[in-house]
Image (cartoon, rainbow, N blue to C red; front, side, top):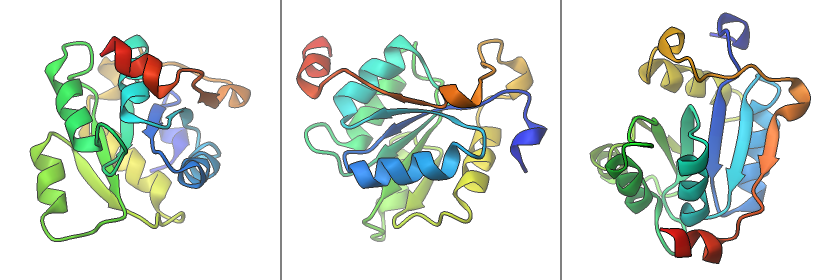
Length: 162
């Protein structure tokens, strides 16, 4: 599946505390046609998802403070964000991690280091698992220059709003 088969530019929220990992995701997925929004903590990511729900969230499991699985449970509990598919990212490919991620409501699981050759394809497949694109009136068209947004929120401000 390629971007040409979609009638929209999927908006992804990448919640990852490691800046190099976030940059890698942006560098790989932006040319594939994704709009990328970034957060460096679960608290900031949740706030961003409440304000502007993305089409899919890529969330690191091992985040400082509120971890990714706890964040997924909070997102699932809110009617504004419960429908958003979440894919867990982890460097800890331990037996049982995938079961825990799926148990928390994630639709998938990607291990790090990321395979840059297959990442875009994986994300397109996860989007297909989520809601049907034709039934989503809120999907947005994008200009290539609008593909990356870095949040000006900080963790403390977001944490105080939760």
